[in-house]
Image (cartoon, rainbow, N blue to C red; front, side):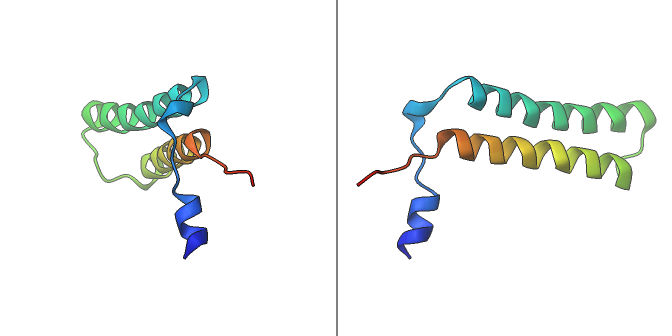
Length: 73
């Protein structure tokens, strides 16, 4: 159980350029999906889903990695 607690330890004092870049990647993925839906009026397209999921997961993982705190003993 301690392994799971260590994985989700987030330190917001470590907010840096990589965190901002990861948040921007999340926003790019969402804006791309919304703009594609508005432009072509197709909201259920597997191609745009796969690209959006790639950007959003990359951004979320980037935020988690950049904010993760490691305790040294």
